[in-house]
Length: 178
Image (tube, rainbow, N blue to C red; front, side, top):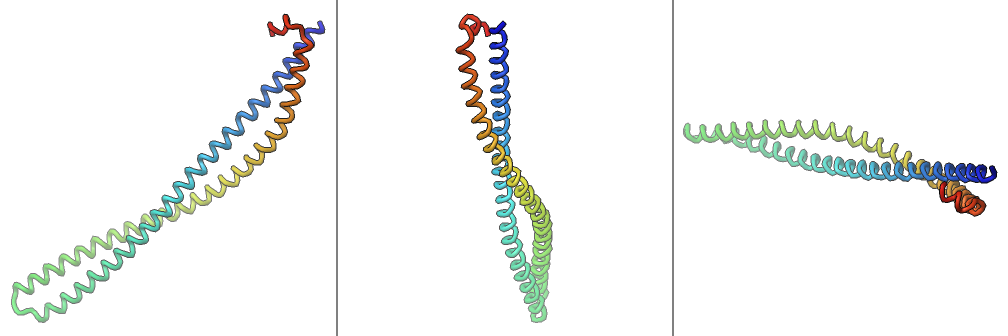
């Protein structure tokens, strides 16, 4: 009867050790998942910010090109008054039309880029908020993991020591069946 109680005690110790292992097994995995997600979000955020810079450069470039084209159109319109024949007039008008079409295309591209910039700014803002939230959550979980590991590490050592002591008390023939 005494052997049965000893085996039962040993089983309880093993169950406690198993609970500690499973509890610890979950936390490190969750922390790693959060770290991975944080890295991914940071990467996406940096790409978004980089794209915003690129859009700004393109918008400035387009604005300069539009201004230059409009100045050229004004210059060509002034030349129309100095034209000597129809062929020169038609050539200048064709160039003006071409420049106006080019300005329209650049203005369309400008609007598309401004729309993309607006959407991207909103996305970056959301990503920054998500990253702040995730970083805070990650910090909390890391603190919890460290404290839990410290607590359970001590408890685990105690249980393992007690388990070894109990195993020595149980006859080897009975222990081999356990």
